[in-house]
Amino acid sequence: MDKIKIVGGNILNGKIYISGAKNAALPLVCASLLSPNQIVLKNVPQLSDITFLNSLLAYMGLKISEKDEMFDGHLSKTYTYQADDIKELIAPYDFVRKMRASYYVLGPLLARFHHVEFSLPGGCAIGARPMDIHLSSLEQMGAQVEIKNGYVIADAPNGLKGAHIIFSKASVGATCNILMAATLADGITRIENAAKEPEIGNLIDLLTAMGAKIFGRDTSILTIEGVKELHGATHAVIADRIEAGSYAIAAAITKGRIELVNVEAEHLQQPLRTLEKMGVLVEEKENSVVIDARDKTIIGEDIYTDYYPGFPTDLQAQFMALMTIAEGASLVTESIWENRFMHVPELCRMGANINIHGHASAIVRGVKKLSGAPVMATDLRASFALILAGLAAEGETIVNRVYHLDRGYEKLEEKLKAVGANIERIKEAD
Ligand code: EPZ
Figure 1 (spheres, rainbow, N blue to C red):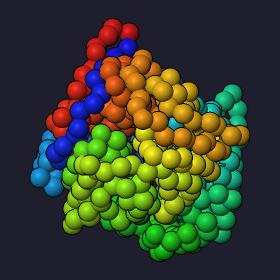
Figure 2 (tube, rainbow, N blue to C red):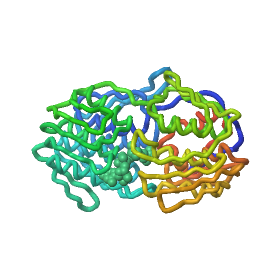
Figure 3 (cartoon, helix red, strand yellow):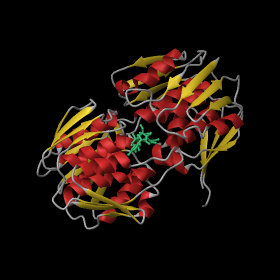
Figure 4 (tube, rainbow, N blue to C red):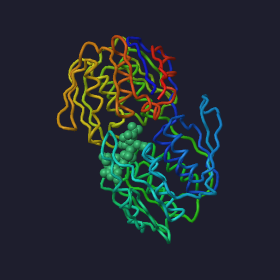
């Protein structure tokens, strides 16, 4: 398994181009199952999660082709998907266990083909990750849902029907799934307490371009008027706000200056305001954000993760890495996932002073210096937090289990090297 070696202490300086958003691209790719016509997706990030999802969909019969293309002045991947010959309506365990977001096939397949079998993914390192909201919503739309041998088997022999659905939590995944399902349902679906993450707006834009009728974008009440069929469309994946936030902290933690290019600052308001409170200069430009921490003292600050537009849970670990070297204390409260402090013991091995209280709160007391160490994390964002700690630490840090990072950070070493980091991948046979 590959490792990443970092020698800390370099001040980062330069520009980083932000890739297309993983969490936007995943539902967009699955939306292509809703139409027999071509869906062209631009700015798709090169990540193992996308490769896994493509292989599942190719197994089902989706035709996929790819090409390199310029997007906003940078070379990126454009994929063309065509679901005119879907033969397989089963998502097997071997695919789903590697990539839980394969649950996005549920809504589209049930809506268009009236049947789907999907291996339940089970929990993961950050929490139990139930799917009750997805499944009960589909039941409210008339589906018969059964769980057998670890699989969800869902049928809607006469198609899905519009329904008035109130989510018990503003789930991102359930909002995407039910939105996609409702586009081809008979009648009107109303989702209350829908998630409002920018990735959902990106999905609504693609579905609308395909001929769907959706009202209430960016609000917690979505109304979808079902249509008989959807047509082809061309669409671009939005910039990855979590990748941007992660590199913003790379600038802050090394007391450097990085311009994040291809960023919607609007999507990052809470993290950017938090960085300012921590003493970092933030300059929002039209298509970029400059993070300047040169000669700044980083000050402790509290964060509370919440549904968008609240502070994103997917940046909690990275901010915690910054807090470890801040002046004073910071309180981190994680309200979305029940087990998202797995990075804490690893940060402590590097000299951080963090106490966890219960499963939702941690107090970070800033230390003068971190020191390099071999570390590993159990999820994507926690792994990036260790990269950040390594960039700031004295000496050498080896981050193990790099496959987590490959799921969500395109060209990670290349991007960090280009702004001055001493970082390299150590290739090792499995
Ligand atoms: C998405 O996960 C993201 N993943 C996660 O990013 C992110 O942390 C999360 O949203 C929250 O922002 C993708 O977009 C692929 P949820 P998702 O359904 O959709 C509970 C990363 O690092 N819930 O919004 O699975 C759930 O337990 C990943 O990129 C139910 O109770 O998250 C959680 O407490 C990690 N029942 C809360 O809702 C359900 O049926 C929010 O989960 C569904 C969810």
